[in-house]
Image 1: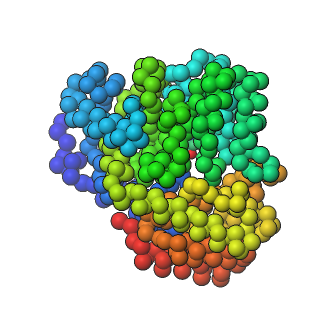
Image 2 (image 1 turned 180 degrees about the vertical axis):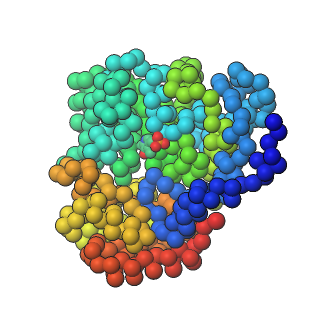
Image 3 (image 1 turned 30 degrees about the vertical axis):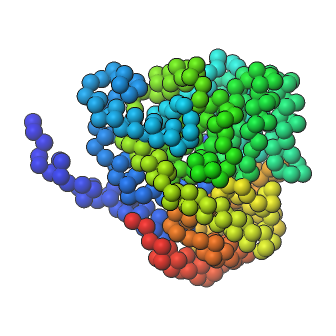
Length: 418
Ligand SMILES: *Cc1c(COP(=O)(O)O)cnc(C)c1O
């Protein structure tokens, strides 16, 4: 039976329940300040590429070597994304198929390791990411995970600790890069340790890929055997992940780890979204954006510190920072909820050597990524710091929270999205 005409023409109007929830989310994004480090705001271009008819096409395998026919344009789109990724990160090989950052990591492990091998990665409590072998994940069950932390004095990675652990535990893979680590990592030293013990070095640059692409952060690619990233945080693009490398002898193993290792067919619309954001990232405006991300993060960190809030490690080399709430006698969950009511989206986070549990930790994680995309500068981020301070001093005061919420909405109205 032929579909009624409306099947191909009616949009969200046909589903008011879903439409109203999406409209609500759009308003939330429009009227609130996004400070969550794992988020950003994509361009109309990326939105159109990812929300396209490409969702209809099924392809498996790599471009020009597919299992299904009809892949001429699919091949062109994926090849474009790969070429742009290689150009942006100045590397020899890229796989743009991982559906997410976690999948990219699981695929690299599967392709490069043998089940049961030892992985040396950063503790989640010190800023590592759960996909680096947390016991609750599949990778945590499939491999033997040993973790390093940070130094108690500097709250930074202690290379002596990493070296001692590597010598004792003989990992097959070492991982650098986390989700709540605000400082640049010494990739050359990590690689020297990996070489000494015969391990691969994986760098997961999800939170600083945009800075690497624009030369504002040390580049892991000359040092790591393989680099993984998400594409929707600092790269400001489609949801998904990527793997990048330079050693051709690893290609088959990494590609096979992704497909058929941990994934089936390609999310071609996601790959198109990645091609779109990588294209944007190759333009000069992306470098200006990333410079502003750093300047704004430093302005925010500095302003919060001046208000008596301790910034973990004393600052940030990326767009990301951790705030210790101890001085306010607040926990991260209570603070995040009060800030959300004021229109300021943040996430609770453990700080290094936290004595509190993950559900009610001592810190907050903030980032300048999304606000900078809206066009906020240092002055706006200093204002945001004052709002944060007011809310944290009055987390139960509805009048204060209401007043901040109005100011937040006014700032957002001056920097509209979509
Ligand atoms: C966000 C993040 C990931 C996971 O990405 P998903 O797309 O949520 O799977 C992996 N690694 C790091 C370091 C991250 O920050």
